[in-house]
Length: 167
Ligand SMILES: [Zn+2]
Image 1 (cartoon, protein in one colour):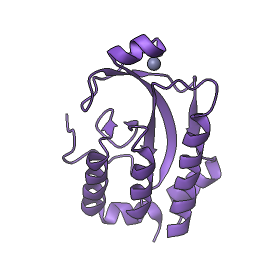
Image 2 (cartoon, rainbow, N blue to C red):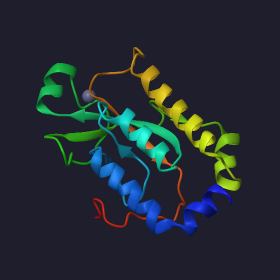
Image 3 (cartoon, rainbow, N blue to C red):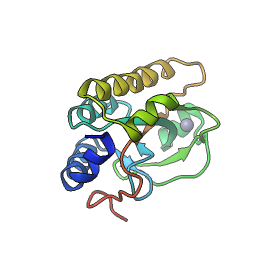
Image 4 (spheres, protein in one colour):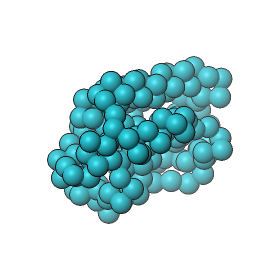
């Protein structure tokens, strides 16, 4: 079965699994769906591993500066634009903007997940490339220690969250 059809035909289970995983890793989605999920840098690797386990692909990463009193002093935050208050920590997230820095998977890979069948290995390989990008950018000279990665999940566009941080 095609990846998207597979997700749509089991939407209750998949959405439940995704939201449990996000909650367990204290990840904070911006908006009502499954994109721009601001992740704790200490927990993001485990989060990606668990998303792979439940069969959910990630197609992009954007960056948010975590503006706390301490980071303001140490790193000169905020570094970006406005954004939401953090649910788990004292402070708020400042959006860096996609033109500053972001990562998108290659278009042919995106289309494959959009239109075709994929294997467990395909999800794993793709999510590993996301993990590698985050590790690499964390050593880039443009990276500041206040930056948090936000994950964009490859799920049906019409999906809205069913219970977790529902606005
Ligand atoms: Zn900052």
